[in-house]
Amino acid sequence: MTIKKDEAIQSILDDFEKLANTVLEQLDFMEHFITSGELTVSDEVLGFIAKNEETIDKMEVKLSDKIVNTIVLQKPVASELRKLMSCYRILINLERIGDRVINVSAFMKKIKTKELYEAFHEVFSNTAILSVKMVRKALLAFSNDDLDLAIWTIKNDDIMDEINSKLMKKLVKKATTEEANKSLLVSTITMKEMMSNLERIGDYATNIAEAAIYSIEGKDVRHHKLED
Image (tube, rainbow, N blue to C red):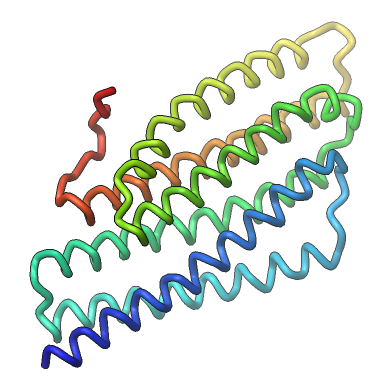
């Protein structure tokens, strides 16, 4: 029974790594087309993203079932159960991150005022880079039982929120000027939604980091501010 249990848990972790790498590939695509400064995303990249999204959805369902079956049938001990439950929590967030990448690529195509995007491109670029870095470090925290990486991710969520708040205020101010036209308004709203999706990726990274801490220490730090 022990061998079967160990094999079952290892199979879950192996599949989890494949899923995580697919999501990271999605994020790499997103980071690349945002930092490039271009508003057009090639059909080839869009095709890869769409195909990966289908893979992520199927893997998330399959892996969720494997986790539930392993918990029910193999009776894992406390530390193993924490690992599996944390993995389950992370799966949900990884699938949502994949959805946000799809959203961002769609919003890019809807921005009609290139000058407006160029004016705020550095903010979008830095936010994309930070959000991807947060997800990557949060996943490493879980895989390597690295508490420091988890804490780093959670603390950087405040920076993400601050960037988002400042940009939103600037965009609202831009949209309410006298020279604002329909195209500018549409682009402003679209960019606000795009930034919100990037900020949400940071939130999901924080959720992953919190799940990692639960796996490592058995502490549920959700809704609790970490001490400096």
